[in-house]
Amino acid sequence: MYRLLTRQELTTMKRAFNKWGVFDFFKDKSILIKETKNCNIREVYFLSNEIEKIALLEQPSYAGLMIGQLKKQFALSIEGADLVSKISKQFPYVIVNEAAEKSILYGKNVYSRSIISTSKMIDENEIVIILNPKRETIAIGKTRFADTGLLQDDKVVVTTMIDAGLYLRNEGKIKNKKQTE
Amino acid sequence: MKTFVFPNSSISCSFAMQYGYHEWLISRFLQFVPDVKGLIEKMEMKPTLYIRTNTLKIKTKDLKERLVSKGFELEHTILDDVLAVKKETFRTGATIEYLLGYYYIQDLSSCLAVDALDVRENQTVLDMASAPGGKTTYISQKMKNTGILVALETNARRIRALLFNLRRCGVINTCIFKMDGNKAMDLNMRFDRVILDAPCSCEGIIAKDKARKTNHKPEDIEFCAARQSSLIETAIRVVKPGGLLVYSTCSFAPEENEIIVNFILEKLKNVEIEPISYGSEGLTNFGVLHFNPALKNTRRFYPHIHDTLGFYIAKLRLPN
Image 1: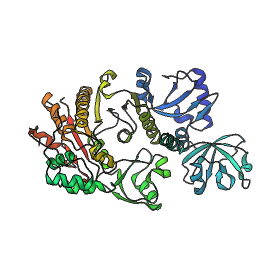
Image 2: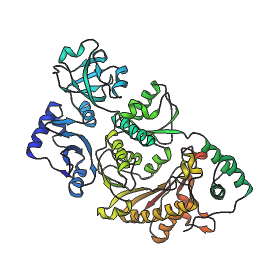
Image 3: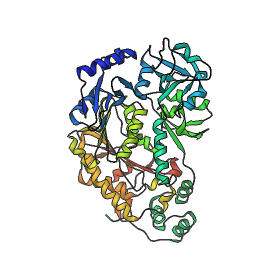
Image 4: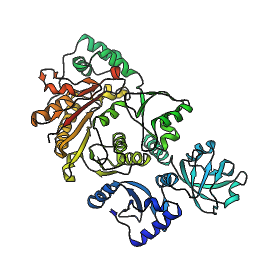
């Protein structure tokens, strides 16, 4: 079910948008929550203004673009991260080289030797957007070290949480499973 | 209406034997397809692969540059957004550019159906059979992510594929209803544009799926045609006065194409068939049937003539 954000959710989202440097962009944009009946998942959708009305009135299966999920905090989806990387001037990121890009798109973690550069002041356990050399979003990860720790030799320094290749890999698994059944 | 079946001949027998088709299908092709041997031989080859740039995310020029730098050979087509892949260095569906939603793998004929829809920004558009989303995402980019695009799909698994493609392409102006196109009236909405890419017998995609040479029967065409008649009647009802309906199939069968559109023209005298720039003229007769002469404005696409999959497009304008 699509609904407007509660005051508390709005506060959480404002904080998140601020953190990701997209507060101004979303100031006048339509954002809705989609709640599923049986599980406690609240998905956050970015919609055009006209679609927002339809979503609230007609309750379609899906409307707009899912930019993330609201748990205790807001967790970006790949599409949300893609928007952030295009709009924001200040957000936590790591840029990896072309060789690492391919393995990350297969869900592999990020090694220090793959990192070309990072944003300033990254904490340990911080959620970062993983960008390729062209600064395009390929994944979202969690740091295992802070700042210079990310550049230690031959260590996994960022755990890949979701990547742009995830859906196709899952579809492939479903197909293979069906074929073996 | 029963599917037309024509007497077999030495030619139909010879083609059917040589290329592994049901003979009834070849006998039918011989009635209306120009150069049947050319068609059959072309459908033995791998069809040309086309990609359509997602201009919501990248310009065609920039996409071309990126793929060419990776060893792809691409050629421009009659549509600015669509490129023919002449050589792929690795699978076109496995590039980073694909995952980032910079392009959609989509046949030129399917893109031409959306082109015929003449979509503008801020319109209200209905896609009556939307998964996996090739036409839906193309419509959205033509609307520049504005207005309202309603996508209908009944199958949950196909909705997942549709959703993936909408997300990949960065679409925000679309809502999906798990709904049969026949129930479109329940939406209580009227649309500036409606596209009905009707479920069909898929004769036109034999080049992609060789099983279709033998796995369908004349009764399947009847079944599809009945469903298409019902869908197009609903489609007409939800178009605004002066609005456009584009009807398409990936079938060669006149029962699924001209006969369906002719049925609408007989029923609604004020509906006009608008011309489409590309493709071969639609049929104005088939077997003992004679259709409204305006059906020549509809378009047929043949693999051996147009280098596309087999396709049919009709553009219907409702009276104001």
